[in-house]
Length: 278
Image (cartoon, rainbow, N blue to C red):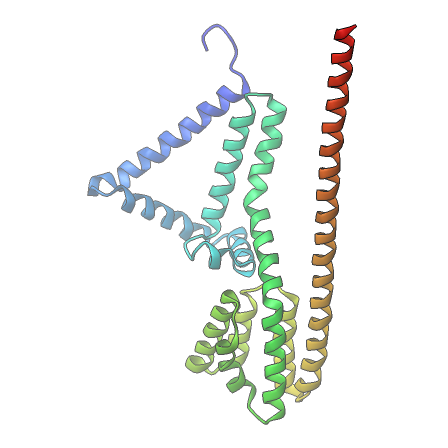
């Protein structure tokens, strides 16, 4: 790089090398003296996470990750710090990879890769919400039947996890049951359960149970919401049918274009062959 100015790729590479060097030196000071790099890395991440908990963005990001199921699918160790580090590393990798073609491509790729983890989390959460619809409808019906039979709401909630198939919802209901047994605080248990999902039907369920404890009108409300979920399932099935119809149409058009291409190629080949004979 002597005798010419550094471009954006080289400058970014130097910055990343500097960050990597600083990170390795920190690991060496905290972990290599004890003969354990992993311990030094974990200790540094733990200290950074401890400091981050005092910041507003940390708590907000942690709640967002929990509500969208990231910590369930990836693991409890996937906290706000790991989420932000993964975004930064992916963004830097995308910028470095595509800046070879053009700096503008690098910027676009960097932004896209930076936003990729959040987009994947949103997508997985949306898929989970669709999978939970049948179990949520069954939950509403089960609570409605048991409430009509005179079973107390707390007892009915404590037994729901056994009849749920979707694993994320089953795990949350199991934890809800444990909280009810250990602490006997319905409000706190429902609040913890609600924070594990970004789903309007789960929010409605928690609100209905709280209202039922105050007014005793849970049966009618549960029945109304079960009908709403039935309509939602019908809408989802309709969307799947439309997507399937579009796919079939697309495949048919693809086959037609391929056939037309073969026919056109054969015609052009025959025309050139006839021209050569003349």
